[in-house]
Image (tube, rainbow, N blue to C red; front, side):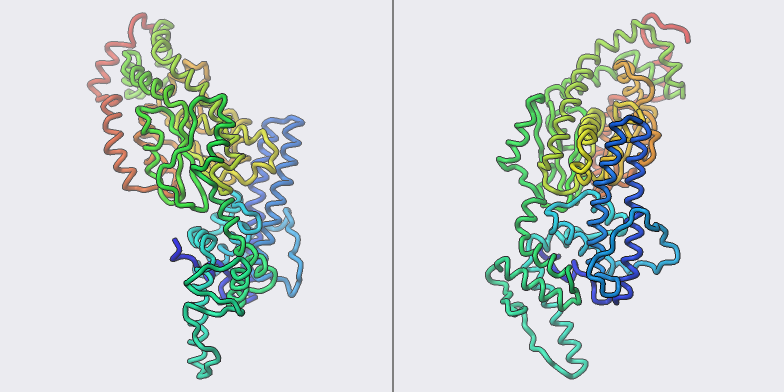
Length: 564
């Protein structure tokens, strides 16, 4: 990653004139207003659905926290754009009611010029706050692609960033001098004197030296004003910033934090899916049941890029649930249901053909393992919510991904966040991907979840997941289950995963469904490998040909079948 450490990649490019920077600032200012207003709308929807005095107070506190974030982001945009405004020394106040239309404005500069400017915004944000807000990340990605490796490399090795920028700048100066036949400076090489500060490949730089080197190089790059001082100060203390950003996975402190909040859950831990690389953002995945302990992390090898971890919770209970689910799908009544579904029979009509005795038989197979694991999922979710607030994986945006009861864990964690003061949770969670979630589509609940998520909230559902339909019926839930249908709340993305026609298939198809949702960081080759290796075995357990469907229908659901 050190190869990307270069100040020229995290500073406004010299190629942009002051007039162009002014135009960029105006456009980004309006994009910020649009992004902020959408977030406020999500809070307003929550207040509308709940319609209580408390919800009105929460909405007011949320808007206050949102405005504070927007003002800070607005200031960083202004600084990165070279403080436009005709010599004004004070950043103009961000107006939440400002125009959001970009019609008639000059277009944004080419990607090679826009990206360093966005990197400067990110660097200003991170170094001044010693955290990376999920709102900031979602906004920057809303504007355009960013290369967070560049920013991370600069934070981890500011000396190298100064050296690389110094070499590039000096090369440009020499080329300019050669062309004008006036050589005013002698090449400094790798060991350079920048503003009287020795910058060499041997030996590290003390914090004041880093700050002086940053100031000098940024001056060469045409960056002046307040931005220079903030970036120089921030990079001089980059070790503190890195410590806050990337957390201390595996440390004694992390173990103590987890232990402190796990009295209600006997088995809970955070496991790395891949070796952590200390990326600017992090991902936490939650499995819904376990054929073996390896399934804590195995489904999530489909992810690359950002650091990816998996939540281990109640392994013993989830293994028992896995066995019970396999027994359930093999039951005669379930074979009958599957056969009828293949004939496109509505579930409601199928339920009418099942007598109370059949339901009792199904209950004996699955009720205790399912309800027990579901109860544990609620408790694990509450603990996870607390761990998110404690930022045990660092002060960086987190994406949450889960299926089945793993999604329930995440829903409960988000519900816990929604119960806290908005200023405490505004920048925690970026994106959330939920699949086959055994919770209702209650609009008030989902609106609360939507408010605490800065980026995307995705509900992946399988309309023909007859296993989840049975589980919901046995759990006393109504037909409005998020894992079976869309959630009608603005801001919730609903993705129909029609290929999942039985709950057990989520395990083998989670990668494919994530790719269908355009989730970032998906390894397509790993997705295909999991489909080939894992889904084949699941299909053998759940698959049914047309002939087998006819036989299952003919055999009926079991004794005491009622005529619909």
